[in-house]
Length: 323
Image (cartoon, rainbow, N blue to C red; front, side, top):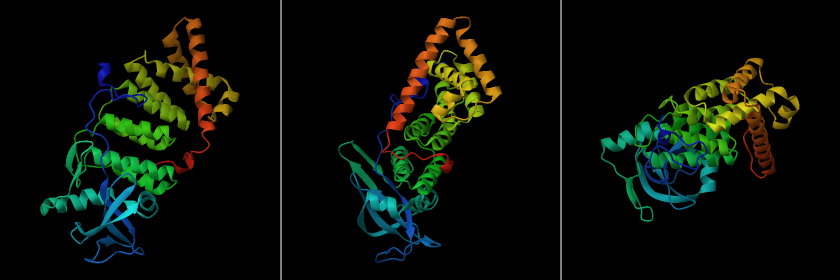
């Protein structure tokens, strides 16, 4: 296996491909309740109790909003809102943007072009492309961190279901999304992103490890061990995968350690498979196993301590599982 084609484990590298460009300004349809002032002009397109708006990012913390008419095209003058107002009152509607506005714009040859002199690009804003998807993904994280979980889950779920093909829509993109969600403690979302990445490749030991680690964080032992087994089949020398096997072995043997790390009991079958993987790595070198175990436990203890020290960051728990 060519290691240069593998996804990143920690998000610090973009192994496997060059970036298609940085995050671009967000442009998408959003909805609000009809109780909000729709402004003047053409009747706003809506459904049920909502109105639709075209929202595009304008600056660091500003968004330009225009109404959407009966043909799902923007009309009238833009008004500016803050990022806080967007999070509080507007709901992203990626499917409506992809399935209604973009086809309507193509039929009527409607264009909306944006430029960024600093980043040197000029592109159509009415598009499902990597910059827009990345921008919307970052907005999804903002919803989650602002404790607006329903909107955050819905947005991230719609991004996973985008049908439009575009350059950069691959395992590297969804792996990066999984890493980002894992880092903010949203492991359920990370699992969904990693599993989406696996639709593009099944022979990537880094990706399989990332998914195993997310399952470990959830306490989903059988799923974790399945991914680790597949990872070892591809690359039994991957250090982080070895470390995770050592950690699972230690937790299986030590109830006090499980309580300290807030992990459920390890099923006997999982513990047995972990022990077999452990033996396959170290064979008869007990001294190497002991050194690796000590290092792994120290690293994990530091990681757990770091999580508990960060009391200013709210992390969604298992009560908000899924999207």
